[in-house]
Length: 215
Length: 215
Image (cartoon, rainbow over all chains, first blue to last red; front, side, top):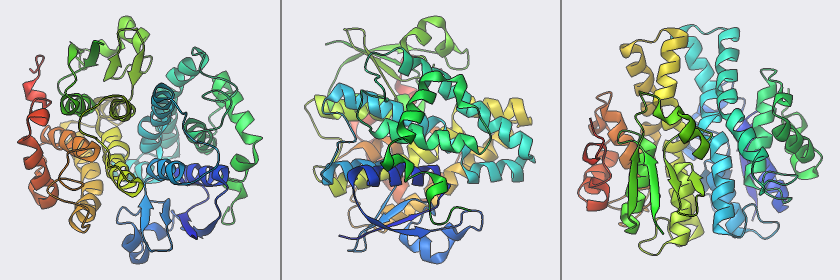
């Protein structure tokens, strides 16, 4: 099976999916969509994914999977290799909750189409967008730091020492934070986990600057 | 096991979890937090959930589960009764993607703390908040309608005829839309699914107006 990954180097949700594919050792063809040029709203891509969102994963039977976390769960269920979710229900609930803190509370507020809409609708300039971005990162990274630092289930990584879905979300969001020069060092546990992940080949190869379309 | 549901009648993510608990036939104690009065940021609640977000599900061993979709997956994995996710990996990927379209693209942009922040930061009045809310509902409900209407996997409900996680998200979001008088009838498939769900006891009992703290 050849998988075609429709994505963009700087897209945080694309980074998540690249890391998951790399962790599973799954090869894929890289198809890039320049988001600022709105290539993701081309008729060709909308025919694949009416949401106009990357990433989307196309299988060679033509079916297209969307929404990064749904694809990561699918990958984990259908592909051998290291598990991206813990074996126990409590562990899975914890890893999913940590993942959704980023995927449902931070990223949706801070992606490009939201920042563009803030500019269009409320005249938010670069400084206004940075303040907005920083506010929502801080709102969730504060309790995320507390929940990671205060729970014995946290290990060198988000959940023990096996990289999984929460690590994937954390890694991609910290890269995203760099766009607005947010200093992650104020959250020491998050920061230490990021550094450990960044030393793992599967993550490093998924990072925005290491993609073929990196500006 | 007695479960304590920390929630609020109008919270869309609380509606999701109430519907899931009802579908599974699981009893719970209802603990209400008035979000406009910021009761969810009381020290007592922050000790349970540092995120300050409802819903949270407290077990009688004192452990607290957070993030509605993580709790719904946990419920499905640990409790008997009708499955909230399909038995096949492709079906699960589809239901999760439909769920995350609402949980990651609509709801995070439209909850109370975001609307409050728009008012504080950009002076968004009621009309500005309604325009913002409507914009993000429309941005995702358009492709959601297309994806539901165009896929033979859709049945009377989001995925065949068994109520599941995508239905739970759709039902709660349509209730949320009513706050800003968004007419869901412009999306006929979504609208028909909502009406069918609203006729199911487990959903109807989870609806905002049917809660003990409903204003």
